[in-house]
Image (cartoon, rainbow, N blue to C red; front, side, top):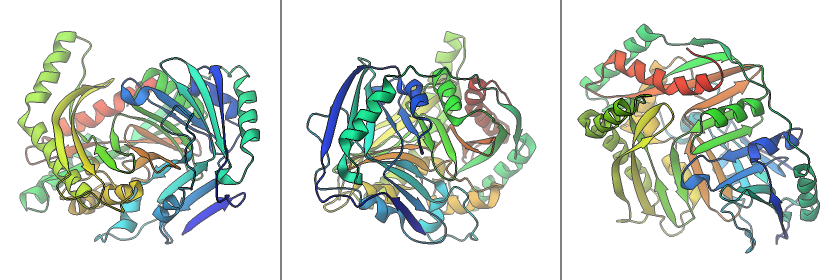
Length: 452
């Protein structure tokens, strides 16, 4: 069902309060001053265009929860946009709105699939509707606070409270030491499932399936300390902490899922991997080998076709294109092959429609998409939950940025899970695919003082 919690009825017009607060520490550090508030969220981009602005929010005016009992979580997101959605003096792209996740498991409500129903512990969607946001310009270190009456609260009081909390020196983080790492599929078991995917490919069921395994370990530290340590030691374009109701999510995702300003849309699917090396010459050889690999390029273009098809469901005819194919990008432990897809939303289509049409990303399912999802559900021992869904911010102005929830921890009851996958195609080698999953896990585990 779709449940909401609301403090007050939103006004028909919104009142804004904007305040510049001068130089502030990185918001992942300032977050300790807001950790006592419910549903803390931090969005912290790494190097690159996404890293200019970082955001902190807590104590949402409303929460949207969509679970397996029915309803439509997208209707709640569509209802967020108000009549006065952005202050002209606010410098950052995001000034308030929804921050949350759309779980991979939501696909079982979105599509008709030949799989049995099963519990979804993280639900299908969780989002806090934040009427106050703190933004930091990473180029200058300057901080800003925006608050709106959109949620029925006094925006001046929200700004004053945030400024008082920011004036307090942040608490020092505690060292995180993860331990007791186990996997639900060892090399032999994972390899056996890769062979079954290869049988499906040979039979003509599919061309590619993204097959994942889960690592689980003890994690007694707070999710904020986990997040701070992970982002410090394993920076990523889409760092995120979301303390949702069902689960705490900590992410160091390298992958943009979709971005839309309500008119134009872009996706940057990742498919194709090589491990990094500390030897610069070896590292560059691996990058060149990835760029030249016919297997990896074919794997990538299959997903480009899936994403172009998904864009075509909500974009204007003739507007969907792939201007960049097979760009090689560096990440802390792997090189990745990345392509770019663009499109113009059709008349009447919204960013929320785009999120619905494209979820979950083809880069973490396979091709054809729905049959790949059915095979994934058959072969993976557990439902994915948030993993391979998306983490998003959706502004009151309708602008959307969503990352793919990979390199992502789901934390609950002192335990954390980290899922890692590989794209299986006709010439996949089971041992090499297992090695790829290990390469993807290595940097995340090392940042938390653990290894597989």
